[in-house]
Image 1 (tube, helix red, strand yellow):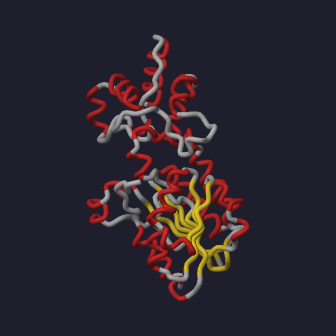
Image 2 (cartoon, one colour):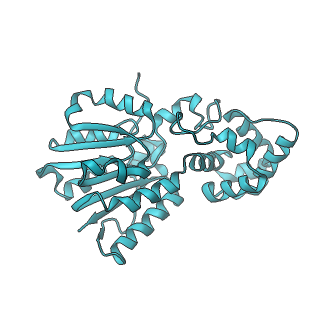
Image 3 (cartoon, helix red, strand yellow):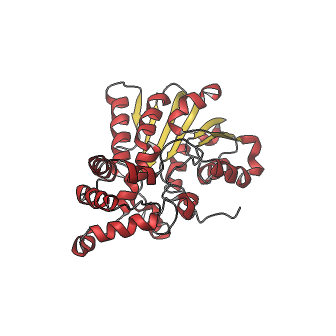
Length: 302
């Protein structure tokens, strides 16, 4: 399997927080809760020779890719199949952990494979399941079976799409004519036809971007997964453990910010190390466009 173009976001900054926590001088157990293509795990294993990584991903293809990529570190790298929302259950037998890392973005592999249906830039089946072997609905199922009101709510809540009602109405009218939407190209074309050209010009981004975000989050229960993961983290960490989370939109970041604040102010179980989120430098954004919206927040337990 050839390697898709991939560069972990805010990796250097994450490594520096780990150094500040003293990981270079001791044996540490780390959970890479969103393995993806293994970029974070690879760099950590290279940087900290005494680190043991347990990595989770719901995508079996990502796990196989990472196993091949990190074959020379097999003794210190254990990949596990599952949803990161179940981190507490999956990692319980290996606990406690000195660090837990989450990169909440879609992997380059998922975006680059048209048949996965994540990208609005390439045509493919409207799927969007991070675990294609799962039983959850595809994005096509959502588009073709949910009511106009339900679609509008999904686009608004998970995509923060200002024109959610207008787009949902256009989709519903399309369905009433007997059309079934099966591909990413079809939904992109439909959204372009629904939104007036002046509106699209003012959006400053691809007109389907927010709808695709909303569908992906809904199909994969991403916000619920994040909330479940944060609830279970405290059960599997060691004293002084850190949790680093990279998010890519305000919905995720808001959840992380509020939970970290509650841990510090209300539960008093540690400190927020990032009073403001760490943002990528301009150089990283120019090198890696995916980094433009990334935010890193870090918490350290007592």
